[in-house]
Amino acid sequence: MSTLLVSGLWNKRGLLIMKVSVAIVLACLALPLAAEDMSFFITSKGPGDGANLGGLAGADAHCQSLAQAAGAGGKTWRAYLSAAAMDGKAAVNARDRIGAGPWFNSKGVQVAANLDELHYSNVGLGKEGSLNEMGGVVNGRGDSPNQHDILTGSQLDGTAFSDGADHTCGNWTKNGEGSAQVGHHDRTGGGQVPSSWNSAHGSRGCSQANLVATGGNGYFYCFATD
Image (cartoon, rainbow, N blue to C red):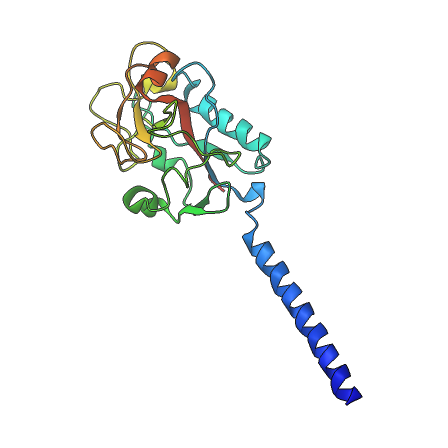
């Protein structure tokens, strides 16, 4: 009788230990990726001079700085921005600047496995998945203020425009006249392709005031290339 009681006691203890172990494992699985594992975000702020980002180099530096502040500065970060052929320089495609994937947001959720998934199925993108570097949700259509316009200068496939029009605010150096192609991170709204995350419509102008008036705030996408 006593043996059975002791055996039962040990069984209960063993069961308790097993339950605790399972709880610990589940808790660990629920934790987000460490900051250094993030490889995609929307900037939580722009440089503050409208679409004048200091060119592609300035935009890349802004991505790197925000990633560094968020604890993910150990990677090489690039802005998802295209640039037109200009002054003897060839066009630059946003899709060619960001590596091969996969990419994860600041919560550890995979937003795209590769370039084809990023540009043609886009299933991981949207308001809940396209977070800023601190894990915050960016205001979308219906929020006040609406900030869903994200600068890209790109066509749907992630390439630069070749029609001779200004879609990049002078390759990201203008803060006055001009226009920049933007996407909708929440994948809703107006424009030619309102559901596009990277090529919904052109901005009203290049100044900060015009970016805000169109429905943005000078934000852009950043991707880690390694």
